[in-house]
Length: 133
Figure (tube, rainbow, N blue to C red):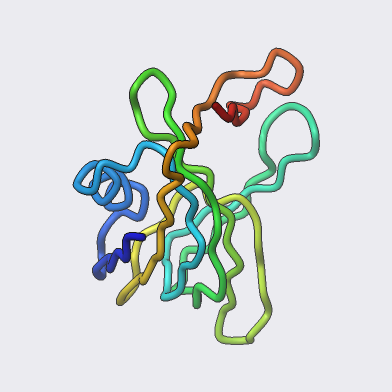
């Protein structure tokens, strides 16, 4: 298990990539994430084509985060879903495309041990789909 604390102003995915590299995590499960994000973009995948994106420039409370870490051609690939709430307490959720840490993010990552996770592009969906080996 690895606990990561991301600091205010850090690029979410850039910092998560550094955490994975520092701890040698090529395959893992993000089991929890809380804090705040700003400048976030989340997506909804309608089943084909591209993600439908929604932008949230203002700070949003990160109420839930889960996902996984896999590899493609030796590079870490992060698949992260979030639920976020603004000052009105309305929750928005989806596939996290980008974001900047606002104040702090606290993330728990579980290593998958002997289970190797990788990603390969699917001819059917065009997505980088999970392969378990």
